[in-house]
Image (tube, rainbow, N blue to C red; front, side, top):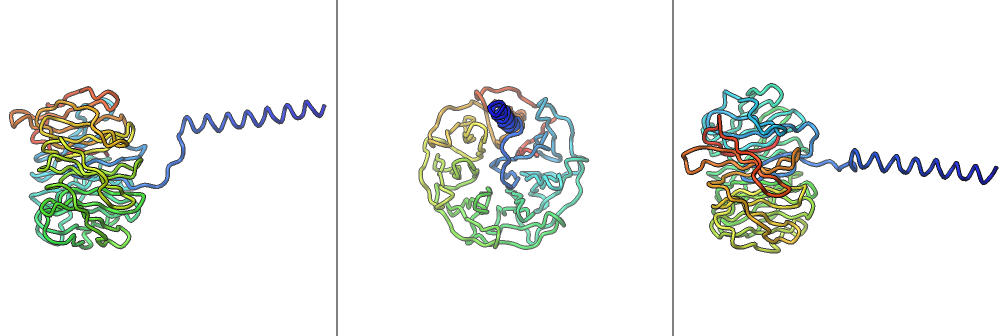
Length: 346
């Protein structure tokens, strides 16, 4: 009788163990709290179950692309003429779109697909890169004309101040390291990246990179940042733990936009001939994807595909969908697009 009880007890434990393992396989290991955002010439991981769409910023409107069908399903009108880049706030389901004509940011609600607010920054400048930081519910906007990083309170949709990133450096793109709560801003004219502590909103360091840095993206798996240097034909790799450049990847001509694929741990760098694919663990080029006049690139965590805007030399406009698994072009979306620039998940 005692041995039978032990067998039953062991069977129960085995059943519970198998049940726990099956739940993990189905639902995944619970993730730690992270920030959710995208930026102008880069794309960082958007880890939210509510994500369904991609958003393309273009002249006069924002196009909504279904991640399931890769088709345009809505047009958000009322946008100003020069929409550039965007960041998504999953808490309020809002999209913050930078706009050159306004020198500020328009807020689009992704549930109603309507413009709900316009935020004028406390200075005249060219709003460019945008990032949303979940931990403090703030939106950060770079200024292409000056040395400022504007801070917006996302709960009230109000500009609350500026962060000086040093001498005028044509600040462009922005990426967020959720592990260290740091923002990284590329400074085009000074060939540097500013490191900003989002707890204190102060600049802690400047990192020298290649010539005229533009796009930047954060690899959360390897804790690295990849910086596209447009005029040195290279990508600088920064260790986020030490804030030092650990490698420079060469032979990537006219690199501008950049995105991290968290599913395959690869970095996609836009260049003059399309995309260059980099293994983010070895920091080595593995392949390329031919796309004429590629501009901005973004990763979609919902379907694990890469989205690339293109103006095809001004003759026609398109959004290319590239498979993150085999780097083949899955779809080309062109109807309804006009001067597409930025693309982001939301």
